[in-house]
Image 1 (cartoon, rainbow, N blue to C red):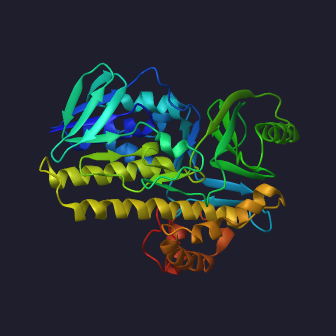
Image 2 (spheres, rainbow, N blue to C red):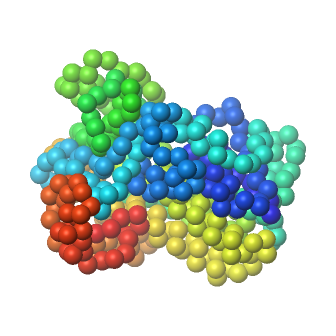
Image 3 (tube, one colour):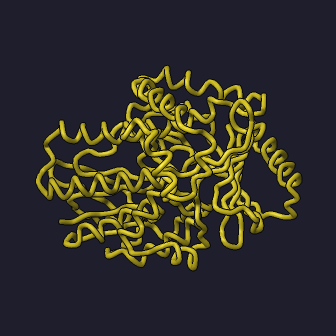
Length: 411
């Protein structure tokens, strides 16, 4: 069996290392252009990543701490969100779960050491699927015929076109942000959490790394200009007595997903498949879930032609449900508002109305309300105080009523 992985970013190396571990007899090609850099900002993860990393590569926190500036993450500290604008720590549940903060570009270099694949340093010019194979054409004219392809080449061009009308994509406009201005700050005393601070024009994240703090201001460029954001970003840092920072540029991103992430031969993963503004590190978690599901498909189907259109449609339906539900969870944070009464937050508060108008999102909203109602029956903000598993098992576990996830999240 011959499998090609396209793309040299986080999702591409997640796929390459996972297939190295789980499909040891396959011939693996990892095709990416080394001239294209990864997005070098600090990352936070959900607990899915540490579990996957340990199983796939044997790497643990101490390895990432040494090589990638990693720190531990117990959850996210929200400041100024919600109608009351109070501060609260959204701790991973149950309390034994932990995530990581790390430098994304350095994690790619570390994971690369656990990839068994032929690296082809080239840009992909074409990707075509037939009934029995996928054909990868390179710009130098070479062609590789593969049984399966994992496409992790980043955002499709059509997803980055403003107001794109494309039947192949679902534009998730119920998430009100689409651009970030990035800065790197000195190391801080922030420990164990990603900080998410509501601001007049959006929100600021701070990710504590060893030796530095990754920081960014997320906003909507249709509502506010870069100059608006730069001014408020600076005012915020000055108010916190941050003496200096490094400008890291700006990044525009679409909140979207492909309607179909798999055609029987080609799996779209990572940012090539979907992107949800990473309020809860959803993108890395989605990449891992997609790669695991794809590997199980390959194990079941082997190299036989994938003519079972109903099975392919079912695979895509499952992926759509997972991603759409994650997007609604993120949008719900915005719909609850913040302490700011501004044009951005006016837009944010109408998030769920826009989701209700989407034929793709609407079917998931009723189920989401079931989870919200169940969550409200739990002891709320005090959940962050359960820092040992024994107490959580004794006092919180008996209160749970829904033993299934809503996307990546539970009640």
